[in-house]
Image (cartoon, helix red, strand yellow):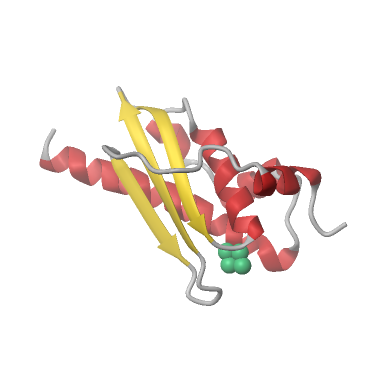
Length: 126
Ligand code: FES
């Protein structure tokens, strides 16, 4: 079978889908080749990610990657979330086919961009 049960589960029942109106950080990334887009919203309190939501317009692996990535960073500190790698996402999904690895990279990038956005907003209005 091409996809692990974990991938199928997170694709069929993605966790944390949606948007956060007053998000503290938003990260949007896209892959020019496949045209898929991923957007991650963070709510951060006292340096801890208290809520996270995502919207992904993309393939099943991108949806599964963003779903599991949101679960992995929820409740973590900003510093911990910054260490999330696409490899950790792939491992948590029990693997992805080689041609789908770039989908997990989107999740890592979206989280990093959202945190960058958070830091920028902090700098403007501490
Ligand atoms: Fe592009 Fe999955 S095929 S994100």
